[in-house]
Length: 109
Image (tube, rainbow, N blue to C red; front, side, top):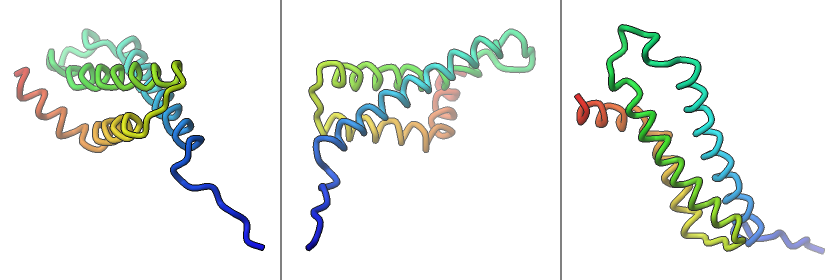
């Protein structure tokens, strides 16, 4: 007799994926705050003034993802489109960080 496997895209996997995105966004923001506290820009006289600007932008992006997906978790209203967009935003921010950083530095210099 064949065992039935649960489908990949069921409600439980949606909940787990959303919670993972919330945890990852919170972790990213914690690492940014920790880096800013332990390695301030004033301690490095050779660093340009806008050295942390891409980090600030990425922290704001992750804060928005954290707020939106965190609200979804708190309200227990899980939506596939919301989770998919949040995963895509976080993944793109991670994969294209260097390109985004160069673009932000070109805008602020």
